[in-house]
Length: 181
Image 1 (cartoon, rainbow, N blue to C red):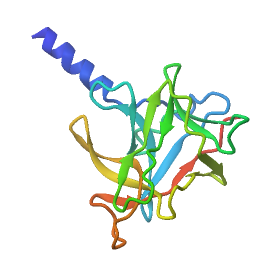
Image 2: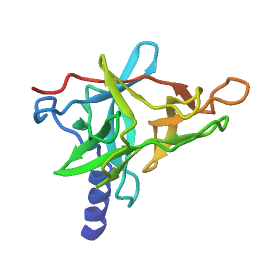
Image 3: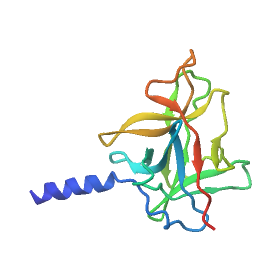
Image 4: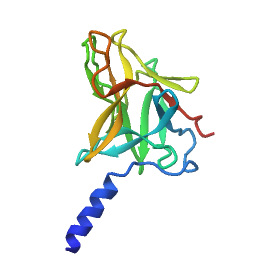
């Protein structure tokens, strides 16, 4: 019985978002958010989905989960920036699937463990954007099931041919707090 309780507790803890209090940011770190309706913003948090080493990027109530510590980095070869979560001393670089021009094609944005990053992000005026491979590309908040819980995930994709959005998705804007000085 104790083994079952221990396993259940371990599973519950591993599903918790990687985040912390608003005061635990290191120099240069910030928090990220997405808009899920006209007047509602949620924090973006990295959580494990099953046994994957990568993190799903999910939206949760800011009052409960302030958002996973995040950094942007530049290199000399690329004009853009990479965005990464910092979790327990590990780097998880945000990765966007190239959806091209395919109508209704939407994929979750994931944070890959040890990934240097996709240097196609841009931060300006408190907003995070990504290079387009088609004029219809955009960030979306999409309903998903992570560890048995229905939750909004940050996704990247295209609307359907008729202009409607894929089922369970809504356009979103990704924003950021000011980096800690």
